[in-house]
Image 1: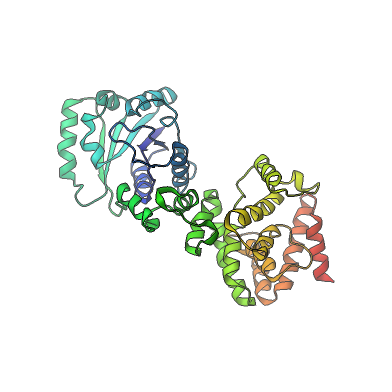
Image 2: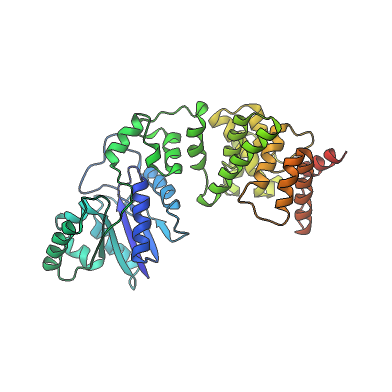
Length: 396
């Protein structure tokens, strides 16, 4: 197996990191990528008021999810959890024990490559891993690389070196980015979920008021709560909610907020869901206590009100988006159906359901409820009473 190793402070991880890692992964035809945030970098001190190790780790995990490598990337905390300076040689020794028969490649940018001989134990580094050095700007030319490459080959005959220039990769200065964030800009240089996490945590001097976010701020914050594979669904639900709200005269802004936050606790497991229910005093019926799918709408609504200050109308739209209930409001119907028919949904009957929803909202809601009831019954699963009551109320 061919394994890439990408280290750095990732303070914060930005689009330059993401696009470079993805490009090198493809060009080297790697089988796996290990992303390793440094604990105490030996070549520079972390700036004052930097995020904690746990926060940098979470940001790196969010960024790694957006590399589009389909489970082939893993974020390790080995340097964050190891005492003392984060020497690459120590990391490689440990990784070689984990992967004794695999081919290791250490990824690095131009600046790191040009100073490699000054690192701690460079000979050991070059004996344990190949070097994949990438340039991101027009100044990072092959002429610049070749001088250093020739020097390393002469000094360390065992070295394996691969250099490449990656056109189109975003060149970002982490120092300048931190300054931009403090000034209220810079979000476009970050993976959306990372930017959202920064706003949530108030990192780098952002100090956003979570209860008064604009849609452009709320969107990345909402995405930071999600697993990467759920992001297209939530963005699709937002767009579907906009269309339905415009079609039926609902409040578009409220529809967008409810859609963006409707799955904000979806990734939590059963224990975490039940803990949130206890925290927010949410009473559960017998079916809800054993059904993970039913819990996220209730905990999501509670979190949306607590953290983001959503009003009662949005709260209820999130609360009922999974089961529905008798006498649903216009916004509740829109979020229930937007979640059901957004563009990434692909199941038998969805095209017909979409057509009906834009012809008559109540007719579409009734059809959607009946489809849910039929599916649950065919699978031998119990149907929540609120869903049955919602269907019966519409049928009169």
